Every structure is written in C-alpha cells, then in structure tokens.
Length: 109
Image (tube, helix red, strand yellow):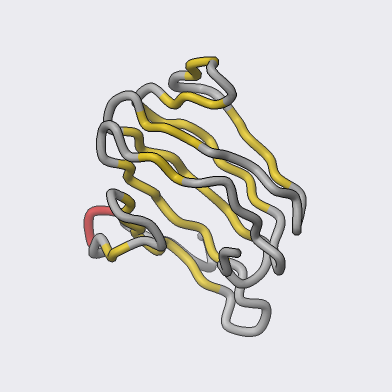
C-alpha cells in the first residue's frame, strides 16, 4: 500500500501566483516546503519571465497548448527549470493543465 494517496477531485483549486493561474496542491512536504501541484492556466493567460529562487521546477503538460519561445508544446511535454534560473514568459494558447513538482518552497521572483 502507498504511504500517501491524494485524490485530485477531493482537493480544491486555489489562486496561483499570477492572474489566470490556479493550483491544486496534491502534496506538500512540511519540512522542506516541496510541493506537487496541478496547475490550471486559463486560455490566453501570460506568465511573465520569473525565477523560483528556492526550488527546482519540473512541469509535465497533461492537456492544452503551451507557448514557450514562440514554439507551441502540447500534452506529453516535460519542462525543467533549475533553481534560480529565469524562465518564461509563458503563454497558455488554450486552457493548460500541468502536473508540477517544486523540490523546495514555491516562491516566485
């Protein structure tokens, strides 16, 4: 048996750090601040270039069309940004759902 199980449909959507972004926290490690979240980006939302100074980020696109550096990515794309590495801007061409893991506290600069 797994030691931790999260049912996404039992977790609420919460406001994200940018307009048009919502988060569903699936797991949070209270000692490290690491989080695994579903992220939902509204169609046409733009996330400005930013860094996560305290965590590496891994994001896997579950659905939708995501534009990055004038190239469109779809379901099945995995993105990684090293801690402190500036990335973006990002644009959701359609509604986008991603499964994202931050290995430390989710902070944005």
